[in-house]
Image 1 (spheres, rainbow, N blue to C red):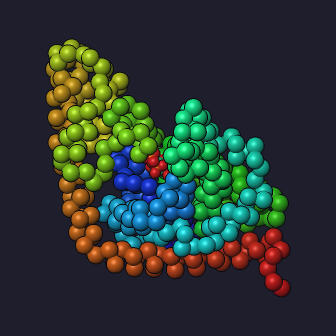
Image 2 (cartoon, helix red, strand yellow):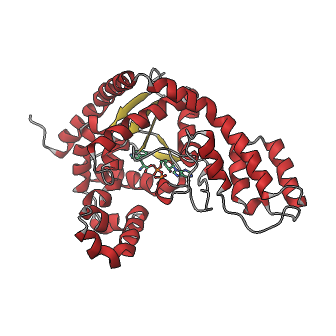
Length: 348
Ligand code: ADP
Ligand code: TRP
């Protein structure tokens, strides 16, 4: 690794089990880019971002260990990359505050994720009183400040490490643009300090569809979990929604969710063959699903076994996160020291 080695950072929220959309959209890239040897890599468990929705300490602890296990099971080698937990590096929240004083409310109101959350909450509104009476948390029926500020904390995550590239799925693109804007705001106000990061988005897997054809997402209940057992894989694939074309009718592969998922697990030659079968009407949706189940099961089995093995030693996982925190703190605290100097709050 030389001084010209580029810096890569990404993160995932510990909010539940990852799915193949997370894997092909973001996490697989983490492994490939780490193994390319071209980057100094930081992979973060974004627990303070998850706190916007996870309000139970036991659940939070479990999700954190789960995500760390997922990172290790997909092949992120802690000897080569820094694996750490956001809350262990307090510079992230400290820098987020500094950025809060530079970023305006209307600017944050334009964020897609904020607008989507507002829509979700407004859709609940008729039931709001009833929900409040049931003593659900206020955060479930009224937007919290953490959700509003989400892009600011994410900008701090990225900018503290002089990050060059951020591998993510399409839905995070705007957040990286916000990080660039925020870096420029700081640099313009106090002087050059932050590097402008770039998003790395793989176009062909930018949005993996879920079993209902919408974007695969933990919040839509339409996922194929990454470490699923065979039964779960079968159930998920069999539930996939298709049009009503019969077994021997010609079908359009580009308008079929089953085919879209085949793309993730199939070589180009095999895929071309399958596309022909679709067009000629020599394969039914049911057969296509059965073929897909076999492919996914074969792909997931070794990942699942590796994860089960790692799970036997959770203490080792905690140690990896502790070591990662030390490495991340060394870099982030040094950067924060420069920030404090530039804004004038350091002691002389
Ligand atoms: P979810 O929408 O399931 O809650 P997260 O927000 O935790 O997923 O996303 C973690 C990472 O996975 C992000 O980089 C995100 O862009 C990517 N990702 C999530 N869903 C998909 C999808 N359906 N297709 C491609 N990438 C995705
Ligand atoms: N917002 C990202 C997501 O929902 C998670 C995340 C938090 C992140 N901080 C980050 C991703 C920094 C990349 C870089 O998936």
